Amino acid sequence: MMKITVESWKVVTPSSSCCSGGRPSPDADGAVPLTAFDKVTYDLYMHGLYLFPPPAPPSSVLVAGLAAALAEYPEWAGRLGVDAHGNRAILLNGKGARFVEATADVPLRSVLPLEPATSETLSLHPAAGAESDDAAVGGEVLLLQVTRFPCGSFVVGTAAQHLVSDGAALRSFLNAWAQASRGAAIDDPVPLHDRVCFFLPRDPLRVEFEHRGAEYKPHPRTEKSRNKVDDRVVIHRVNFSRKFVAELKARASAGAPRPRSTLQCVAAHLWRCVTKARRLGDLRTATELRIAVNGRRRMKNPRVPEEYTGNVVLWARPTTTSAELLRSPLRQVVELVSKAVTAMDDVYFRSFVDFASSGVVEEEGLLPTADPLETVLSPNVEVDSMLGLPFQDFDFGGGPPFFFMPSYSPVEGLICIVSSFSGDGSIDAYVPLFSQAMDVFKNCCRSLAATDARL
Image (cartoon, rainbow, N blue to C red; front, side, top):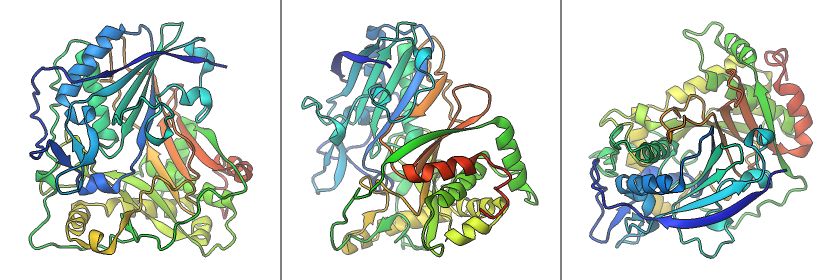
């Protein structure tokens, strides 16, 4: 057991240092309107835990570094609100980010690996938004918690509003915080804040794909009942060894023009195993796999730089029937996934911008399919990947984190894939399913023999 005690908290505001990257361009009321990409992402807080080796830096250093980073990334010191036209926006009011300090009563290594969604794990990051019972929480879009352990190790827990940025942009901010805490200049990279010039609609508009049912869905005529299920969702952490992943990729890449990616192979394997474990009554049921695609690497006219600080993510959605998914060999499923990801190119992203700018969303009352209230994804699966993320620059002076893991309340079918904390090249997948499906999933997910057989 591990006991976490919150020792203190404060709201840190931006320092008065100049902003090397150029500040965001607000309107006259100090509001930066959300882009189409901001609006279709999940309206919730992203939670993550970064585990660091000793020594833990002094609080004064972390606070000063945070103030300097907020001066370069003023969005994270703002609040969500509306602009003069009633549109949702980031208010650049400099009210600050919350900084929490806590202590643990046991050495960090004694509780590793951390299990997801336990009360102990959830206490390593600050509660935010609707999940917080603290009346003092003042609408911060960024909350940070540093928990110190008796061994000298420390954990940084983050709660960041997804409407402000995607995971890639959040990592850039965290790196800037670490740079400033080390006394280094925040200039690699220099953040780019312009939320207008990269996403201008074309004239005339060219909507070349159907975005209803992809990024948008119709407003429900009646309110759906939620969470009325007779089973509880549990999270299982499955470890895929380096050897297993290599064999998985070898089977999936057989006959392909180039080796398939690790993410696509593991995601396809998990999609099949989860679908089998769910025991869907009607195998003609359609099922889709949802994989986030970073538009910074796809959009070309104009190109969106890696340093852009907002959201630029859409989702690939390979779709088939449950029966076809279960009877197809792994290589065919991976090919289906690969084609869907490849199709998310500049043309698709630009079509989305034009559709979002056409007025149809408002006229038809469309809502984002990324629904934060959806707690059961069956018959679908979503995979979020943190594989290969560059954490080496998130270094306060004693070295980068030796492990990262998500921290969240479980959503059935929402899988997170990370590099294992063991450092041996293996992969951990956090798989939330109803408890009655877990035994079948555990038996299936480690079996390569079943991968190319009829599940």
